[in-house]
Amino acid sequence: MKNRTLIIAEAGVNHNGDLDLAKKLIDVAAEADVDIVKFQTFNANRLVTRTAEKAAYQTQTTDSQESQHEMLRRLELSADMHKVLIDHCALRNVGFFSTGFDIESVDLLLSLGQDHFKIPSGEITNLPYLRHIGQLGKNVILSTGMATLGDIEAAIDVLEQAGTARSQVTVLHCTTEYPTPMNEVNLRAMQSIHAAFGVAVGYSDHTQGIEVAIAAVAMGASVIEKHFTLDRSLPGPDHQASLEPEELKAMVAAIRNIEIALGDGIKRLTPSEARNKPVARKSLVASQAIKAGEVFSAQNITTKRPGTGVSPMRWDEVLGNVAPRDFVADELIEL
Image (cartoon, rainbow, N blue to C red; front, side):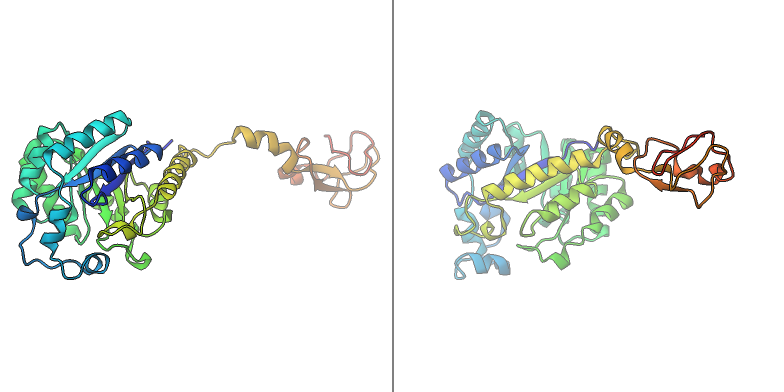
C-alpha cells in the first residue's frame, strides 16, 4: 500500500492577524484530521520594501490603496503568538508548522523547536537564505512555484553543499497563482521533478476545489499542501483560494481512500472477487441434449454461467471428445 501522504493544512495568513481566529483554524484542521497545520512567519520590514507592489490577486482581495508592506504588517505573528499556537496545536493533537520567509524568522522557528523547514516558492532563488537552511541539516520541503527545472536544480545543489542531504528534501510542484487556473496546473511536472532529481515529490495546491490534490496523490505525491479558511468571504489575500472546513474534511477523507485504493500494484484475485468469480465467469455447457458416446462439437456445446465447471479456455481441447454420459440442455459438461 502507498505510504501515508503528509497532509498540510495551510492556514497561512488566513488568521488576519487575529490570534483567536488562528486558534479556530487549528481547531478546524484538527477536526479534518490533517497531519499538520501551517502558518507563515515573517517580518514585513525584512520581507518587502515599502514600495513593493502587491500581486494582482492580492489587489483584488484587499485594499487596492494599501501597499504590500502595509498588508503584511497586519498579518505578522509575534514570537509570543507562535508559542500560543504551538501549545494549541499540541492541545488539539495536530502538528504545528510554519514557513519562515527570512533568516531571522527561520531562526525563531528553530528556537521554538521546529525540526523541519519549508522553503516557499519566492525564496527558491535566495542564495543566503537557502544556504542558511541547508546548514541546519534538517528535513526540507521545497516549493517550486514560478521555478524552472534549472532553478530547482540550483536550489537543491545549494542545500546539499550546505549540509542537507538530497534524501532529506521533498520538492513540491506548485503554480503561484491564487486560485490557479486548471490549464496552468501541469500536474505531470511533479513526476518530471521526481525523474530529474530523484527526490520525494508532492504538490502545493492553489486550485479551487479538491480534485487536483486528490489526483496528485494518485500520481505519487507524498505531501499535499492546501490553503484553508473558516470562510472564503473573509477579507484577506488568500481566503478566496482556500477550502472551507467541510471541503477540507472531504479532501482528507478522499486522499485517505486513494491511499488505500492504490494498493501494492500486484494484480491478484481479491477476496471479494473470489466470491464473485463462480457467478460472473462461464463454463462449458450442453446447448442441447447429448447422448453418451456422442462427439462434443460447436453444435452441441456452448458457454454459459456459472463458472463452476470446465473453463471455456479448454474449448479446443474438449471439441472432438466423446461424451462420457448423457447430458441435458444447460447441464455443465464433464470430461
